[in-house]
Image (cartoon, rainbow, N blue to C red; front, side, top):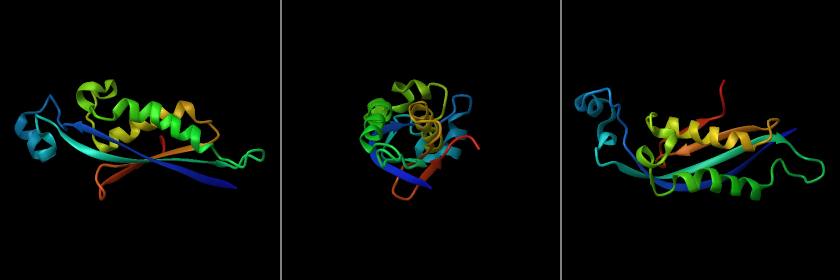
Amino acid sequence: MKVKVSRRAHFNAAHRLYRPDWSFEKNDEIFGKCNNPNFHGHNYELIVSVYGEIDSETGFVIDVKILKDLIKSEVENAFDHKNLNVEVPEFKDLNPTAENIAVVIWNKLRPHIDLEKELEVTLYETPRNFVTFSGMN
């Protein structure tokens, strides 16, 4: 029997959506106010879920304290109060859309989660706009 264990976290970050190979006008047409050259910020909400079998000794799928510490070290410390375009190496050549941020977070967490367990990342950019990534399908 598989069970899903989730941990909610948050971070605040600024970004700008644009492609340097496009004109300002094309960036503005595609990304709108998210193309602000002075950047703009979000209060991101993050839900990290781990699916797996319940360990017969501990009763856990994953110790939530371990998951909490992992999110803190790999995500919050790397992204919180940062300009994603400027200060986070993963976005040097990657547009920091919610979709790309979720994939980057998944990739940062995946090496630390037992491969027998499934990992899912849900990222809320606003209370109404969110993306979910659960690995390469």
